[in-house]
Length: 183
Image (tube, rainbow, N blue to C red):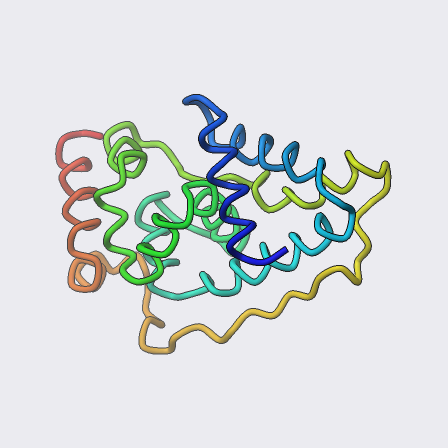
């Protein structure tokens, strides 16, 4: 499996599910993946981890911190899981400019309603598919995890509202407006 095929899987899952929680997209993606050959299912886990490594960036972490009102290491993984379920266009746009998330309907709703955006189940798409298809756990040698170092120029306290407003002005305005409105 390559990235293009993985993204097609996500887009199909998105098209085949209705509104609701984002883990529905991950569940459907796992069901679709389970119908594929075992080697392709196992390869999907490496693609997923490669995408997670690609998105392991300080500016995106700062955006996740702002959107979710805080963001631990695990929380950042789950946020990126949510981001994966949004599809390739949203994912790529967020990597290019995390502040672009201020225009995403779910982010706007999160700001208005005080919701958190995360999808832990998205991290298990291949695991779930492999177990469903074979009755066994995904072999550990199917993937490796290697995150790049974080950008030291973003090594500041994400609670520094003034710094976040400078670096992520649209998200800052969206979430400051909601805090000011009592949201």
